[in-house]
Structures are given as C-alpha cells and as structure tokens.
Length: 431
Image 1 (cartoon, rainbow, N blue to C red):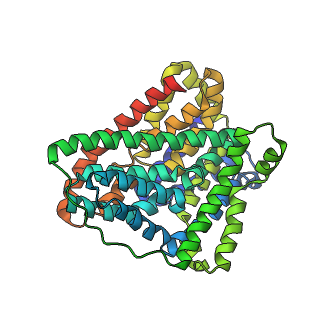
Image 2 (image 1 turned 180 degrees about the horizontal axis):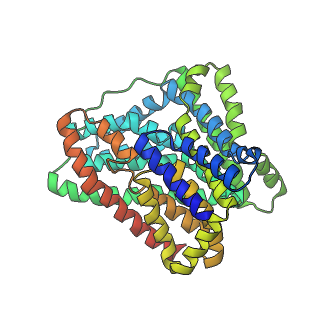
Image 3 (image 1 turned 135 degrees about the vertical axis):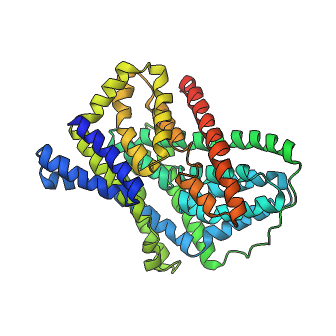
C-alpha cells in the first residue's frame, strides 16, 4: 500500500506536468480511489482529509492582500522603491532584490511579484548594462524570499504544513523565521559575488532612467497603512510570546491570534473603506495554487494513513548517514521542484517526513525544514520552472529571450543550486 501511494504521488506530478491539468485534481482522484477502494476508508473520511485550516488561512490572507494588488498600491510602491536608488546605479541589483522582497512580503506572492517586476528589471538591465542573469536572479530571489516572510503567502503555507505534521505552532513560527532568514541572506551573498564578477567583466553600470512615480493616492495610502497594521498585529503576538514565555497575559493573547481570522476582519475594513472591488479581489485569489496544495494534502494524508511516511522515514534513517540527511533532502527537493510546485507538491510531500526522521536521527527539525525549502527554491530560476519561465516571458524581444534561455539554464540554475547546497551544508554544522 505504501508503494501504491508513492506511485500515485509520482503519477499525479507526471500527469499534471504532461497534461498541464492541475496536479491537485489528479491527487484528489487518486486519494479517492486508493482510500475508498484499496484501504476501505469511508468517503466522508477522505473528504475530511481536505486541509481546511490551510485552505481558510490562504484564502482569507490572500483576499486581504488582493486589495493592495488590485488598487495599484504594491505596483506604485515598487516604482517608488526603485526610484530612490536612481542615483546609485551600482545598487540596482540590491534595489531590485529589496523591492521584490518588500512587495512579496506585503502579500503579493511570488508569481505576482515576478509578473510585474521581471519586465521592469529586464528593461533596466538593457538601459544600464547590468548583466541579465544578475538582474533575473535578483528579482527571482527577492520574490521568493519575500513570499517566505512569516505573514506572507509561502510563509503561511509552510507554517500550516508544519502544524499539520504535528509541530507546535510556536515552533512552526520559529522554523518559518529560519526559512525566511536563510532565503533572504543567501541571495545577498550570491548577488554580491555576481556583481563583483560581472561588474569587473562588463564595466561600470550606467545611469538608471526611471521616471518619478506618482504619489500614492488616499486609498493607496490607507491600503498601505492597513497592510502594515495587520502585519504588525500578526507578528507581534508570537514574537512577544517567544520573548516572554512565562507571561500568562501574553500567552493568552497569542493563543487567540489567528492570521486567517484577523485577515478576514481586515478584509471587511478594506471593503468598508472602499479600497477595492470585492469581485475583483476574489477573482484575483490564487485558486490553482489552493487546489494544488489542498488536493496534494488529501493524497499525502492517505499516504500517512497507509504508513508510507513512517516507512520512508525508517528507510532513510537506516540508509543515509544523519549528517547527510539535510543535504539529501535539499537535493531531492531541488529535483522535484524542476517539475512541480514548491508550495503545492514539494513541501507537502517532504514536510511530513521531518518530525519522525528528526526524532529518530536526533536532527534539528528546523534544519531539515529550512534545507527542504532552500533546495526546492534553488532551481526556480530554471527556464523549465515557474520563475525562469516567467522571466523568459517578460523579455521584450526574441533576441533577449533566446539569450536568456541558455543563460538561465546553464548559468543561473547551476549557480542557484550550488549556492543552496553550500548553504545547506553550512546550516548542518550551525543548527
């Protein structure tokens, strides 16, 4: 039965990749067939495996953040952040990275940030002479790292997957902080090294030509302050609880904080203030991602019920030396990420194995969770993956697109992979 569930997970990924049909739909079908007809589960038990908490949190948070996207707040904020650095062209890679990070951290999400930041970045590369690979990696790294922020889309999903795997919510928050810091600091090192190498070869970067963006209007200013307020409320409670673990008042407040419910309240406030159109906000939600994450969640739950996760964990613990387990998970995650979504497939499949493996091998779970995400996001710049394909699609002409394809595949992807694995090795000895 464990073999059947593993083959079903692999089949869902392959079928989704080949047919371009949402992987989550295949996963739901396999969960029903295997669960009901091979394992004897009731249909109601299989339906109950739909990860309702994760679905609700992603739905409610993305609904609130969608107001900032649909009314132009995030796009205009990106323009202002880039404009600030117009007189320091050598800072362009850092400006692109930080702008993408801030916008993604404020809830835009990885794909949305790339969709409107990648064309701007490639245009700036052409105007200033900045290496295309450096610009592409800067915007991709920023979108990834910002989305991993504790109150942003990917960070929320990681926390939900950890708690579903049996991790304490406070510990899950700390683990998510580790993931964010790792995916924020690594790019700064890589960008600095690449800037030094490409700068020496290509000469100084030219002046940036960025028009002064219009100031934020009243509704956009209100949206920005509302977003910052919600982020502060969501982050303050768990941080205070970590700092004052014995304080009963802080513990009580933290126990009542739920980012999904808070985001729902703030969505009502945004609608009352008329900061955006309700129908446009709902239409802009990441429905394909939600279906993929929850569908795979059902199939993973069937696999857990069949004992697959425990058997895989036992096999890994008896085969791979403990010191190599985090690096191995990072490599597996990187390979999986070439063909499947980090949020929808890679982390839902690998995160449940972390608690039993960590207990058996005496490894810090934080290390393994971080290694998986770092590895999974290492290859996102590949032209065959989501990030690389979005960057390719943003190229203004066929000449740049053809040049980018080979450079993303043969330079950017290997650099990202090697950097991620070196970080995972370093983290193995630090955590």
